[in-house]
Image: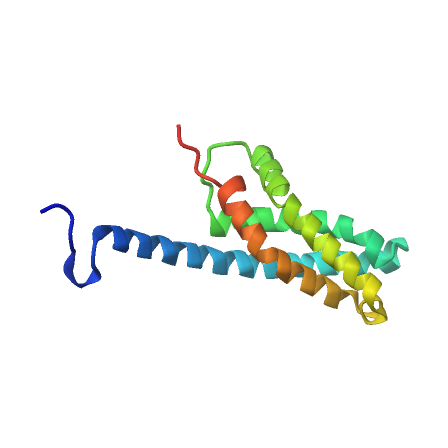
Length: 154
């Protein structure tokens, strides 16, 4: 007979996949909410550096990104993915930052492109930052889940 059905839900495999999809959707929601926190950190630091240091938004953005990526690493480690490995935090931060590096490059390319396209974005750089951040979100989720916070099989 084997493993054909379980009640009204179909095969055990379907149930397992349904649970996995729900878990992934829950993680994505948490990741996106933490991404909003990262956006606030990124935008806040970028805007503060302008009057405090004289850096324009394009110069301040790489610095503000480092603040944002550190904040989101900590929050995702704690609330989204949990501590899934027994590694040192610095190693995990390095993996997280590296895994999100491609997303960051994508984010920065979009940001700088928009800044160069319109004076609207130069006048309101947070709009360019928002668009770039949203477009990089899905890639960053995949990279974080599969590369930075992956469960190591021994």
